[in-house]
Length: 192
Length: 131
Image 1 (cartoon, each protein chain N blue to C red):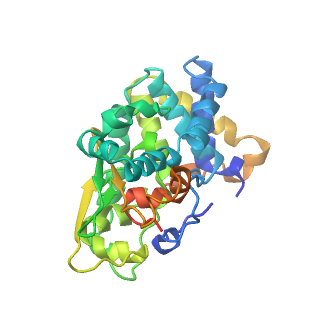
Image 2: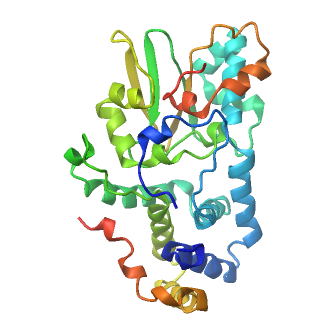
Image 3: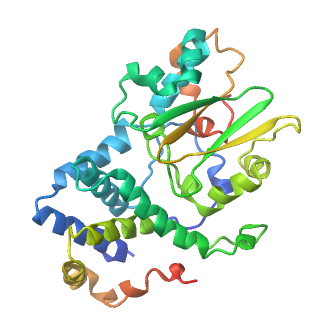
């Protein structure tokens, strides 16, 4: 069916038109929010933080002890209104992030969450059987690797600091930024 | 609209940081409205989030946990349907818009020529809430 015929599309349009009539919002303001989150706030922000941490031990320590303060100098658009906690992957510990109740996510770092992050299957299964879900994402973890699942909330948003690639200190920070994926910062993928 | 849940499909995304997060334009509009109203102080974002948790929770409770396992297909979950319901519920609960006005406006929009073929369908569109 076309966009115009979709009942949800009609309901959204009806709500929008009523709110505009009441002067509570404008179509341009809605456009601006969508553009901001679709185009300017995204995983590139998180990738810059990760790449910096791989190359700068002092920054990494600061990031792991108080991420909210450590990322403030980046002045990411949209800010980070919730407390940000960065958890570090190591050869013995693998971290993965979920929001079991809805879709809490570090927006300022990663933009808006992917579809699967919001799905009931991911939200429940990553808690009950994280190794199996991670395997479905293509991540086979050794038996001696501890898996930690972090449940995001209204107050705290988690970001995974992936393991640095072997050449992290030999290539440019820009090249590293380009290699850090959104999924790696959620904890369902490795950085190649 | 892509409506099937594919964890496997999501497991191999292209190596780019910037996949489109809205599957249809109305989803982006709904997000823009919800976020924009919070930024303008019409409600606190946490209050919207509470409404969203309520909507999603109702869906989650409808799923028999066992059905999430193995090869049994997961009931279809459409995040932005719940998002839109949450937006409606908080706006009506707060008296920002009247339910009657919304119903009238939906009917008016449905009556437009391009929408004539589904005038009575919207009440049944959320059957996956049934449980």
